[in-house]
Length: 214
Image (cartoon, rainbow, N blue to C red):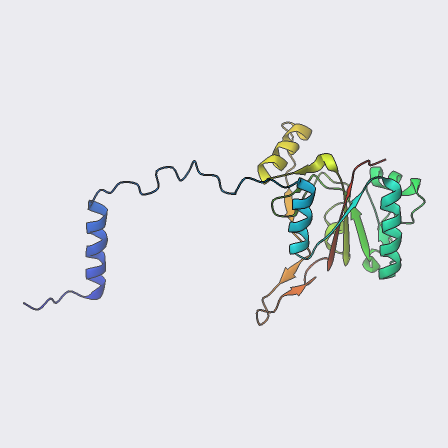
């Protein structure tokens, strides 16, 4: 006898049959399985590898003098003149080594570099965690073509959950209302699937990890 049921009806019939049949869970321990393989690398190395893989730049500095020497090289290479820094702790640090910068937003439309702190560095994916508690504000990490992040080694963690624990330890119940991760320079592939860096933010991201931030 000819079956007059449509393809849609046949499909629904199979779905109903499958729902009625009880099957053993083929992956009983899936939720207990780790998402990532156990990491055996030093966090500094893992972060540097992941950041470099997404077109970021990683620079390790032992102290402020090492940082200052690297900054002078970058400023000379890119011909930086409009360098902005709005966080008092960073301003004091830069002033100590007589590094020139803008303390206000005067002529900010011409800004070439924004220097900021961060909440954490996440080694697993090379991300930089920032929040609205920073006095640098959102503009300084988005508008200039070059974004420089300065972090202490104590801010380097393996996973996102570890970064949130740092926030909890720092702010207690007053967790910042805006938390964001910066993963490499801004990018888009919307136009003909061609990857373009710096389409809606910094073209270059430099992360300075300083062992002795003083």
